[in-house]
Picture 1 (cartoon, each protein chain N blue to C red):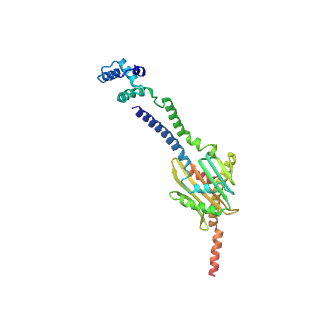
Picture 2: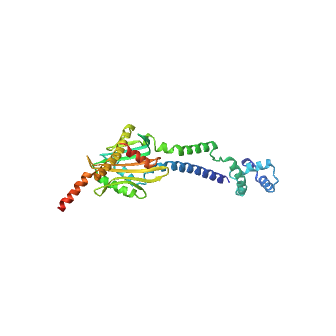
Picture 3: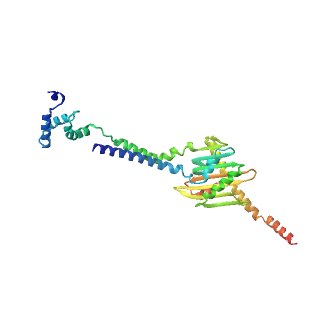
Length: 156
Length: 160
């Protein structure tokens, strides 16, 4: 009687149902009854194999499985595509990367930055004139004549 | 079987996160590091924030008709050792590059234009110039552009 109070099924009945279950003769009501019995805690060791069998099914039904919802997947894919297209602009370009350092002081005013950039380009384009000037002086007939005169003076 | 399913879920999450990270980083890193393979990047790092120096960085800007993806310049006054350092950097960066122009004064290159190999869709150019009068001044420019470097160079040299 104590057993009946503690467990949902007494052991002899449980044994009978288990035997019937293995023979494939149990009804669904009996299987439910057996399952309820086996899911109880503190059952004797002898019921472990059957507990494992029924425990598995219960575990399967009760444990929540984690799955990324399709909608979130598609949002993720869209975000990744967006990152490909806009990533460089977001992280690299834009006003954040337009700056100048003047004597170690950072300047972000775009007008000032552009003016400094143009000044440095001016230095390069100005160098072209220097090169041309140097070519001009090389081709300068007067200079060549002066140099030849120097040689003729030495000969005399 | 339940554990198997959970581990499959975790694997798919990991794959998903990895995919997003790879795609994200893959899109950003090439742009960030286009210039870092060059020795002159050291000159920008070393001298950019010093006194007597002007360093400029512009990205995707139109500069009076110039269309640059990246423009970096360094102007240094009265610092011959900086000029020496930059010349050494340029010697390394010359490898694999086309030297468009070099002017040597008293045995020292004072003007160097380098056309670098393309990086992706970007044409790259290094311009260096050093003058001694009226004061010692050197200018180092690094340009990335979608336009051909020859066109960029023509445009720069045409303008004053």
